[in-house]
Image (tube, rainbow, N blue to C red):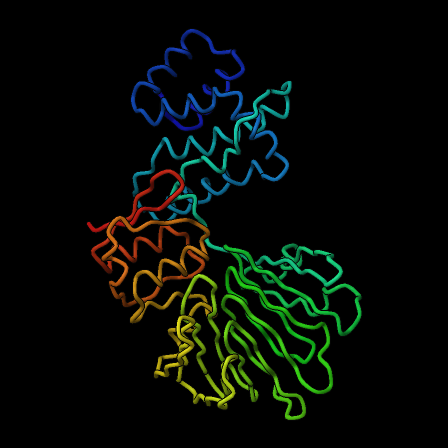
Length: 388
């Protein structure tokens, strides 16, 4: 039996159209009987409701890209003379989905009112890709501008200035820059301060700073490279605290779903004050990190290796001394997936090493599995983490 993915793709396509010959039907039936995954795929692509939903998604999907990606990977493997076992069912899954989308656009409408395919679709580890440059800018008037398309020139670096991309609006108007899960963005503010925003983060700022001070608000994680200006102090507000900056580089991690806000000074000088307390400022020296606990508003200080904290800004997840729960939170934001610990004791495991930020998720979990007593599997739309 010819189980070549392209041949099976052709047979399934002809089955959908109802043009299979007797010999072709026999060949397809034999392939389906080989594996339950094959049978499940065939059933899915015979579901008119599923195909109808995919039709609605057709305009948002480049049906040529998945097959091209697979072909590039195959070519790379051949060039390197690496022999690996590639799942036929997984390859066919992508190819047939593409064939279905093409077929639907050239055939009469199909009906179906089932829930969105994405909401019920099982996650596939090989399909999880790293984040990319994306953000949305909102003005106080409610105008929303997608900034994703502005980044083609520097897509390989994952960052993009947007200082000249903001539409003409009043200089003092407040703007809100949202970076979603699976995204990152870099912005140069009106004073030439540079801010790198990590996934699931938000920066609120004026288009032009006033003459007395410069003030922004951050939710999520951001790395700041603040332009020194003694006449106009720079303030960064986040949950429960305000940081006064004296011209420096530092990192703030203040996610709403985490109890601790981390402020890490890389160079220069900053001072931190709590919102509920007027007792003064806490000054940080380079290599120091302040931890503000939202549960009791207490601040603790510790020495850290700043390269670990700011590794994300330089293209790596540095795991040195990081608990596994923290690592998985960061990975899930960047790769945009949901996860669950089958064994809660894994959360406190500490890892060493680093993970390339722009590699596929499969590379990330391969490194984690080699570093620790852990394995990854899928269940529905979640990644399940358990001990080996």
